[in-house]
Amino acid sequence: MIVTITHLTRMRPPYICVAGLHERNAVRPVIAGQLHRRFLRSNGGPFAIGAVVDLGPVKHVGNAPEHEDHSFNPARARHVRMADAKAFWQELKAVARPSVESIFGEDLFKRGRWSCAVDRGRGLASLGCLQVYGGIEIFVRGLDPQPMRSGLRLIFRDPILGKLDLGITDLRFFQEDFITVKEEIVEKVQARIRTGVGLLLSVGLTRATVPPDKPLHWLQVNNIHLADEPLWNS
Image (cartoon, rainbow, N blue to C red; front, side, top):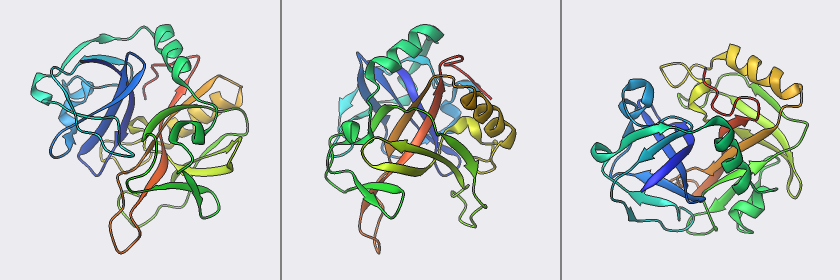
């Protein structure tokens, strides 16, 4: 299966999560454990934002809401080429939806003032591309002592659910430790957004939380795509 990578996120270091488009359908390549950072293009592997990757044979293993999951053998995956920037942007625009509900379905609900979640075993999807307009702010909230809570956030207004304040897991905003935020990149991207550059978001749901909390899949921003440089890197 050939996919174009549209989602590339940090997990607990040193692991990553990737997803992409195959014939405009979302696909998340998964293995029994977690993907190691050695599979990043920067480390000699196949995966990067905009990379066209041949995953080799895959098997659909998805369940709600993670309908996109396909098992693969990472040893057989190979980098084919980098997508053309303009073609990549057009591919993102072709699948972008106008609201988070139009991606994840009516099972997505507001949790707290500005967060969203889906109950385990519910939902239409766990990945998507979102069109957003104006009033967007990226910022670093005071660092949390929990190692994976960097405080990197994005605020925007959804046309149905209103104001949302979501965590950003875009790998390009983080240092090699996957924890420390590259604040200069935050400032650079925010400055470009303020000029009115076209913006699309790769969004997704986390894996379900475990007890003692009620199992929930939380909405997050996986990647930020900019019209004037769709394949931007830090």
